[in-house]
Length: 130
Image 1: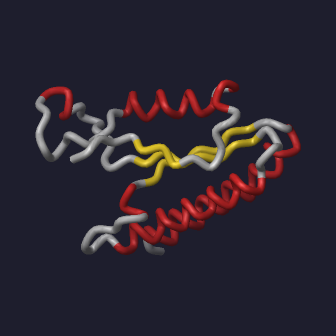
Image 2: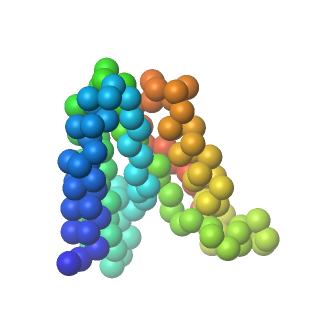
């Protein structure tokens, strides 16, 4: 199974499994990490871009379906997760747009909070300009 199929089907199955329970509880947060390459694919990246575009379409549709139910669905857009903290150690043109795991976690924690209840259907970029 290609990466495009895995991303799309996994997202669909998770939403089908948990979405109804979130709505029936009247509260929930769905967050997916996507990539700006879904909208602007790079050479030789079609499979990845297709998978991420499908994931984004699923969350966009879910956001509309769960509006006013207490459930939200949002996307975080990340170019590269800087697990080794290379950007902090030595910033370069290559890693300038990378996102640290802590930045991703902070965004997820905020979107999971009650204070973020009005944010639904957002595509939040967590990257700078390269």
